[in-house]
Image 1 (cartoon, rainbow, N blue to C red):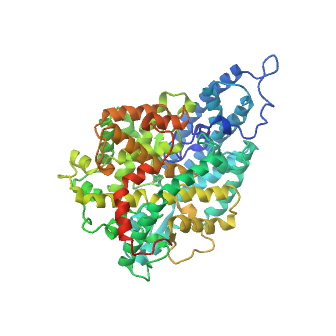
Image 2: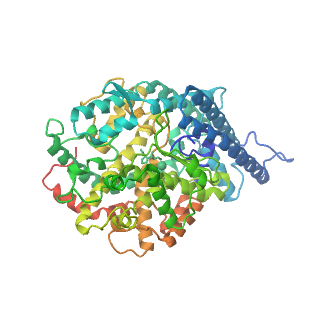
Length: 624
Ligand code: X8Z
Ligand code: ZN
C-alpha cells in the first residue's frame, strides 16, 4: 500500500509506494531460508514431526490472514496518503505496525517447514513469506511500533515539505516546476538547495530505522537488509549484484556519450563560470529536481534542425485542451486497443487524479490495489504535460498488472520481479510514437525520418540519463544497510556515488555538513527499493523489441507502436497473469522468448543516436 506494493508480507509494511502488489517476493530454492535453524518450534504430528499437510494448512491460513490485513491496511494507507494529518499518520502507523508484526510472525513460522520436501508451489510461497518483507522488524516487543512510527514520520516529512518562494511556502510540485523550466542559475540553485532543507532532520530517524530493520533482517537469517532485498530475484544475492553490473556495463558507454553532449550544450547556454566544459555537470541545470531524467532541457541539446521536431507532447496536449482525466482516459484506451478489459467504474470514482487545493496529499504518483482483486486506483497530482502523460501510462501498467494476476493465490499476486511491475506501463509508453499520436488526433501529419534524431534525443534524455541514477540509489542504500556507510558518511557517500555514476555535482560545489540529500528523493524516506527502476528501464526495451518482432515490424524500433495489436496484447496479458507464481525467467520467456535480462535492445533502439553523439563528441574530452 503505501509504498508500492509491498508484498504480502510486507503488506505489512507495506503500504507504500508506487504500486502495491500482494506478494512481493520470490526466491529460489538455493537462496531460500538463509539461516536455517528452523525446525525447532513447528507444529507436529503424532510422530512428533511437521508434515507437508501441516505446511499446506499453514499456507492456507497465512494467505487468508494476509488478505484480510491487506483489505484493512490498504484503506488506512489510502486515506492517510489522501489526507495527511496527525490523526491519519497515527492510524497509518498503527496499521503498519500490525501488518509488520503479522508479516514477521509468518516469516518466522515459514522457516519451520523449510526442511520438508515440498511441491514447488508451496516452497515458493514459503520463500515469499520469508524474504518478501521490505522493512522487517525484529519480533521484540515494541520494535514494529517504533519502526512504523519512524517510517510514517519520514514519509509525512517528505510529502509535506516546503520552501519559501517569493515569501510564500511552495510545495514540491511548485519547486519542481521551477527546476524544470527556469534557466536562471541563481534561481535554480536556490530552489534546489531549498528543497533539500526539508531532509536535514530526517537523518537521525533514518539511521534508527536502518538499525531496527537490520535487526529484523538478522532475525530472519540474513546478514543485512541489503542481502534480503537482493534475495528477491530467484538467484543468490551476489549473483544478482553481478547481473546488475553486467547490465550497467552494457549501457554505460551510451550514457557517457549523452553526458558529454549535454554538458557541451549546458556550457554553451550558461558559460564556463556556471557549467565548465569539462568535469561533472551541475545537478540543478538538468531540468529535474534529482537530475534523474533530462528531457526538460531538450531544447538546449537538440540535434541541429530538430529543435522543433513537432513532438513536444506538452504543447500538443495543451493545444488540444486535454485535462488530466483526458490523459488517463487516453491511457486506458491504449490498453483497451490491446484487448484488455476497460477499467472498472470504481477506478474513476475512487482515484485521485489532480492535486486537491485544500489539503496535503502524497503527490508522488502511485497505483493501488485496495482489495487485491479489482478495486484498483491511481493517485497522482497530474499536470497536463508530456512527462505526466508517460507517468499515467506507467501507473496504469501497475493497475492492469494487479488485475491480471488477481486470480492467482494471494502469495503469487505480485510482479514476476519488481522490475517487471515497473516496466509494464513504460513498455506501453514506448509505443507513443508519431504514428500513434496521429492515430489519436494529437498531430496531423507524421514527421519524416528527418525528425528521428530529435525523437531519439528526447527519449534518451529520459531513458538513458536515468540509468546511472536508477543504479546509484540502491548502491547507496546497500552501503548503508550493510553498515559500510555509517550515518556520518550518509551524505558524502551519496555524492561520491552521484559523481561516480552520473557525473554530476551539487550547485555551489559542496554541501552543508548537516545535509541529508538522499532524504530529498521520495523513495529513500518512503523505503521503496529502487533497483526495480534500473531493471525496468532495461527490460521495457526488451519487451518493446520482442513485441515489435511479434507484430512483424521491420522499421526502426523508435517508430514501432503496438497500438491496436490484440495479438501482442494477448501474449503480454498471458505473462502478466502469471504474477509471481513462477521464477521470473519463465515469465520473461513467455513474452520475449529469452530467459535473461539484456541491454542489447536499448542499445539497438538508440543506435542511430549513439552514432550521432560519437560524431558530435569527436573533438570533445568526454568523461568527468
Ligand atoms: O516512482 C516512480 C513512479 C511510481 S512507481 C512514478 N518512478 C521513479 C521515480 O519517479 O523516481 C518512475 C520512474 C522512476
Ligand atoms: Zn511504478
